[in-house]
Image (cartoon, rainbow, N blue to C red; front, side, top):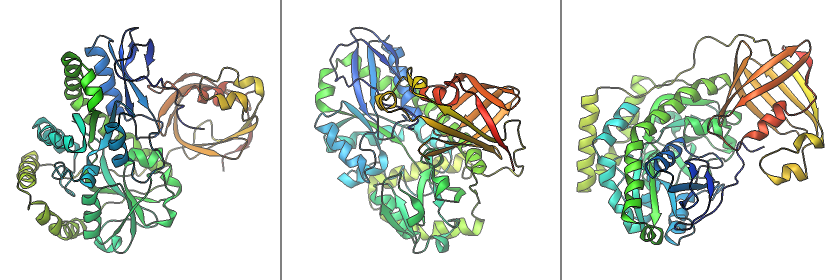
Length: 468
């Protein structure tokens, strides 16, 4: 089951329609609703959710943003294709990774993405406060789109499939899945790796690893096919560049355009906060799922920095990039912080009251109030569902044998699960029977199906085995 079901109204700019905006609140009957292509799968990046909410607030509900989720999902190079989509008016707006603009000849963002330069959220905050990304934004017009702004994003890390990627020797000759960026490919080659372009959701067992943010490692379930994340090598940030098509831009009034740009500027601090929070929650989640988060040694880090010197030499050949590199390096020196580091706690989670195996049987009537995908009501997954709770991890298996894993914690009668998104519920144990209730899915408004699978049946979960 998908973590979120897409049911967005696809309304173009300038049209009036009553709507409930998932990200931006309740738009009025005469609201201008703008569509935004979301390359992030079925879950919107929290940085953009915060921006959409701020747009709703500043416009008093007269501007709404509708996410068109799973845009070019599964494609190896979605960013460049999405730029072309926005230029052609297939959606009003999109977010595109700053990394991909060099594929269309725009190199303005390369200083921001220089390898192992912006390696902490404190430094990323300083860079944005100094206005450097905003100065880089004008170059996107060369791609035939209009830049609304740039939001800070999470830090990208090295994920190793079978061994930790802590130095150039470990990376030598390994195929590393990389996003669509000439600079990132160049950097990985300098470190001895062979960059391979593939979808972020690809199975990693055929590769040596991937460069990815922690939240995506959790969300893409890479704990199933990779074992290591290097905890103190922050390769580069993932800034989100928000762009609009020229036709959509021209339909907006100056006041409406001002709301979009002002709201984005006011979201920058919150965007850093949610990126940091994503790491803070994702790291222990990965540890509880069995991944290891080793750190590179000082000698390892120096070896990587030495290997990357030719990349910096090439970047400094462009005068504007060289100037921005100098500004960022100055901020890094004055900030005085080292790379942000994540690691696994030494203590293992203790066994909770729910540990063991549980089953329940779902029938057709249990799906009548499913609020999302019609295929669930037309062809409901009836049959026996299984929950296995062991060592702080909940594994849910549906009647077709498909599984999902959720690290979980309990406190009194509450359970907290963390994964692609987090949710909370109350539970009640009555002998060998288990029931869930009072679900809270946070910002995920299309996650009601989990309430059905965890608690919607008249049949409680019945314990079939104790934890071993």
